[in-house]
Image 1 (spheres, rainbow, N blue to C red):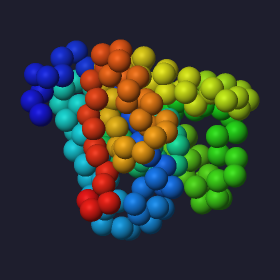
Image 2: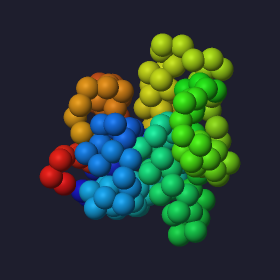
Image 3: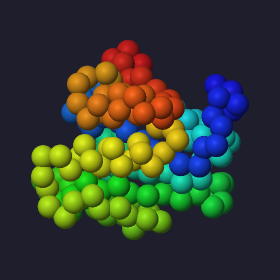
Length: 174
């Protein structure tokens, strides 16, 4: 992709599937997961070259956390980039295993900004979080299997409002 396609990019948000929709589940050692993480890094590098300096992540399990960790890892190389956590509700990690909650908390403490969408869970807080991320961005990186759900809804919304979408398609054979 040529950089001229991306004019005036300063903010990039991210959406992606959770482990239950990924072919490898939560096995991050699987070669397909390792490959996806590399593709996420490549996409971040691309939008950074095009001007993105602020990155927004929805902090869900799976691809969202991969994205946030990649942005954090690139901070030494890309001085001045910032990471924002768009948290749908205070109870987002309720029911998560302790190891994932600890990972989430670590990432949250590395963020330059935390935007809380709702203090309490309600049926629309995740959709409002996704809308906030898209409405705040010029480009959306989407790691997706194509299965119905929040990631697909976010991609459709981004396209409908003219936000550029970089699609990292995840398939079984990848």
